[in-house]
Amino acid sequence: MNKARRPLIAGNWKMNHGGANACNLASAVKRTTAEFDKVDVVVCPPFTAIAWVAEELRGSAVQVGAQNVHPKDSGAFTGEVSASMLLDAGARWVILGHSERRAMFGETDTLVAEKTRVALDVGLRPIVCVGELLEEREKGQTLDVVKRQLNAFASILADKPGVGAIAYEPVWAIGTGKTAGPAEAQEVHAMIRARLREISAEVAEKTRILYGGSMKASNAEGLLACEDVDGGLIGGASLKAEDFAGIALAGQKLA
Ligand code: PEP
Image (cartoon, rainbow, N blue to C red; front, side, top):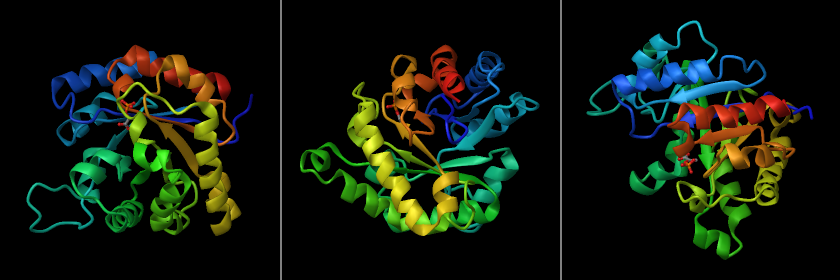
């Protein structure tokens, strides 16, 4: 099988491994994915470990990302970190609009769009998350919810086709062990691709759409084989290098 786009496998470490452990995990990811030349591998540690992990990964193909950014470049924003600071620290990617940030930190579609704009302007590659709650899926609102979230930032991504990525993460599948089946994932990914095509053929062809939600080595191949699934955003399984490498291997085989 030849995927239309180079698979992107990104690990979201969340609030885990903020110090020396991060270097050990990064080093293990570097070692276990060293042979994979057909996938892009990204790890997203907490802010405090970004510079260390970037140093640990210097010279390897594994790239570093952050999990959030503030939309302003500097100033009186206690506790926040700007896109240029992340870039300075060695980050090349940033996860935006994760459902945990939307639910726990009140991030709106408008704020996620603002962050997407700033990340792209500064030279960070955003991975922007969308996804429905369980009750929204049960009410048959999945496609409407995801389209609303997507519409907030899609035209911003279109300014630099292929630089950013989108992650479809059904909220009910995150950290629960429940995964959307390949057909369920593909339905949403196809809608996202179709919406991007309305903006431009180029952005639709170049934008990688990742699946996230309890992805692991055992289910990765089925999900990544879907036409419009171009990679994965991985939480729990990214905290063990062997598990994460197993997912990257599935991408490598399908690429
Ligand atoms: C995530 O938090 O982005 C995620 C997909 O988590 P998990 O893989 O643990 O479901």
